[in-house]
Image (cartoon, rainbow, N blue to C red; front, top):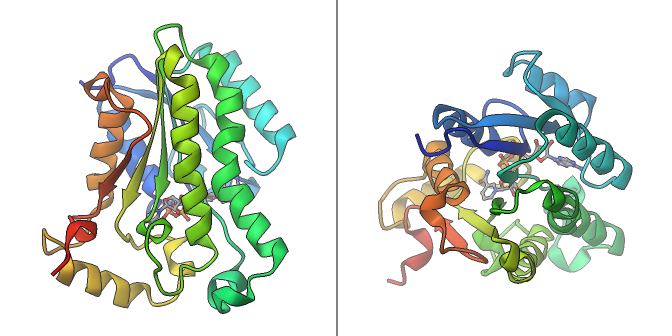
Amino acid sequence: MLLEGRKGVILGVANQRSIAWGIAERARAEGAELYFGAANERMQKGLLKLIAADTPHGLCDVSDDGSLDAFFAGVRERFGQIDFLLHSVAFARREDLSNPFLATPREGWAVAQDVSAYSLVATLQRAQPLFPESGGAAVSMTYLGSERAVSNYNVMGPAKAALESATRYLALELGPQNIRVNAISAGPVNTLSARGVSGLRKMLEFNAERAALKRNITTDDIAKAACFLFSDWSSGITGEVLHVDAGFSIVGI
Ligand SMILES: NC(=O)c1ccc[n+]([C@@H]2O[C@H](COP(=O)([O-])OP(=O)(O)OC[C@H]3O[C@@H](n4cnc5c(N)ncnc54)[C@H](O)[C@@H]3O)[C@@H](O)[C@H]2O)c1
């Protein structure tokens, strides 16, 4: 098994449709032991419908330094060390996704950047001391809206661009400790967050029609790539944005 004996932290499970849940299921099937973080009590309720009550978990609001500190203290206490971390977290206010991009207010921009991009830095600040001397791997989730202008993705586009750039800076700085930092740029998947972007159904149809593989991706397509990036099979890969999009982004005409 790819992740036999490995310990990992999973952030971003809201419900069974969450990309983080798909990744968690695969990682467990590959032998990993997981510690789950939930944004708040409501998300924790959703999480507890999926995991047994004695599965390691705790509250982890990535926009709150105190919450991050307490969460990673819990991880240290239970696991001692971790081998990998999944950051599958993003947020933008509804109005900043539906109003014209030009109308984005300072506050909405800041919220999207804080929760969706800075949070990777804040999370790795706490996770870095928990990786063993042999190193570790962190993976975050991004979308093509960082590289191209995608209708309705709005304020989230620049937030994902910042996340991808932070991935490279973190990879460079943590490379000497053999901590690899990568991002997966996933094609659209019907999740709670994705439904916040209007026109999702159209987007899924458009993607399936245009993608090289002539279909949409599944959560398990993403999960398999994430497990590869957590594992030694990707030992030479860091700072990378890996597209798992059925080849949508490579097509010209
Ligand atoms: N669904 C897609 O089409 C798609 C495509 C590419 C990338 N992504 C990215 O994948 C990741 C996961 O999204 P998803 O589609 O599984 O949706 P989701 O709604 O299931 O997951 C988003 C998660 O972010 C968490 N979150 C929000 N604010 C938080 C905070 N302050 N602290 C901690 N957690 C917080 C939510 O609790 C939720 O669990 C996101 O980064 C998203 O941008 C999604």
